[in-house]
Length: 185
Image (cartoon, rainbow, N blue to C red; front, top):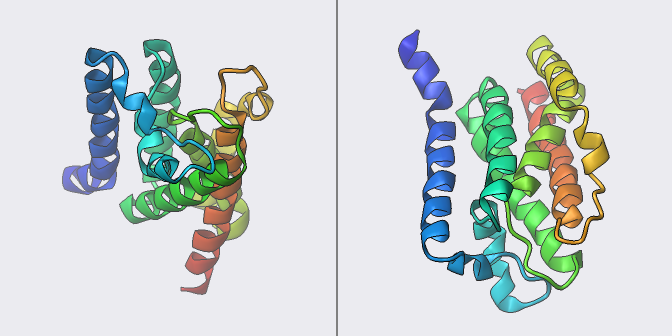
């Protein structure tokens, strides 16, 4: 039983550890890594699709992302490490790609695109997968994080609402793809 639980959460804990390690490095270097965020429609800005979720503008920005990232990641890990990995890759690639294509010309950094992606994924998975585990987690996420609907379109200037919006969209796409794949198997 203990081995099963460690297998289920191992990938998440490694990912969270990497986010924390990059934050410490970025903090100690005066946030020099933040130029590796997504910069829309610039060839060098494409690297940010991979790196942006690991970079934060401040300790407050980091903390406001790491807490929901950990909680939603734990909930998503209940569905297994493969679903966590596949959903994360889809959300980072599609959400980040859409930010690169359509967002304002500015560096877009932070894990909030992934946070909103996991949130929308868990909500939509109940619809697309249609089993009790997926529906139960969707209800739990709705109860815990219903306030995210309001911040989905936060238009305060330093906040990348585009990352929120496109992350959520990518989460729904990932749920449709992975939830329907589960139904067919």
